[in-house]
Length: 320
Image (cartoon, rainbow, N blue to C red; front, side, top):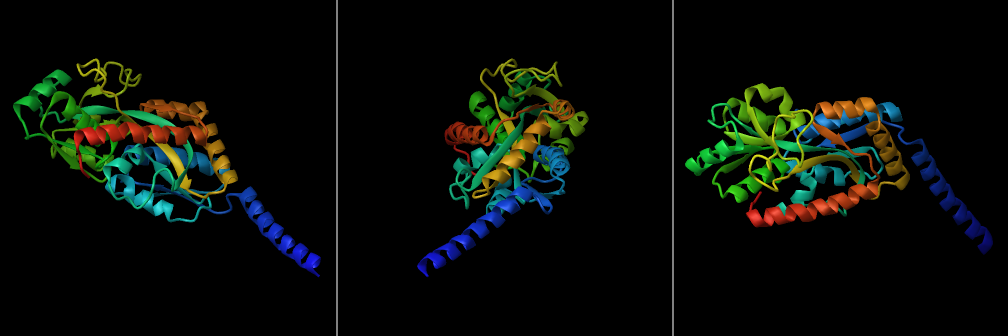
């Protein structure tokens, strides 16, 4: 009797695991949602809508993009961590994920413990952009304007804690300047504010800035090397601020507990997409660099980002 009971229970357990494995093997069997923490038109939105069709094509299920803007993508991040860990809710994140853990003292999620990295697929540096009315055509001239107008200039960003915001704070520390940060709900709104003259300058990634470049002036790029897309634009280091290097990244994460086969399947699709010449060409056209690595690489990079940005946040004393 006991042996029959044990065998019966074992059969039920194996049946449950077998069903779960079968479901994972069939993944995906319904549309997938990709949540983006910024408003439409920004770098994250552009990158999300670039990678989503690749996943759709490879997996045979529609990837639906959903924008949940606010609090430097914290609203979207918290939302995703509360979704079922089944692979049907993806989080398209930027470098803000590595900043917010230090910037916001009370987050309702942990960027490391509550997410499982899938793949980081692109990086992009920021541009220092000024409104055409500002009498500055070089970084040196811009610094002179800042010095002559302490406390009078405003700069926009995609939100508190974004690399755009921290680029401004790093600039403030390096030149000992005095200007005010105005956060917006995404890069798109931030750039519109600059183009319309609401603020005097901003930092923005190239993909988002390109459509409005005719309404602003780019002074430098925050990468280590010049961009092949804008070869005549100097780096911040070349323009007189050695060591000024900031960049953002774009990657896909899922809620912690998502089955390993699902993560592997998603990573494989994204890596193969990045290896396509057509996809890499699109990234290059937007001034972004491709990355094709495994989840562990992404995990290590995220931890390094948290450590690196914590130093900037603490040194500048910024608050959300």
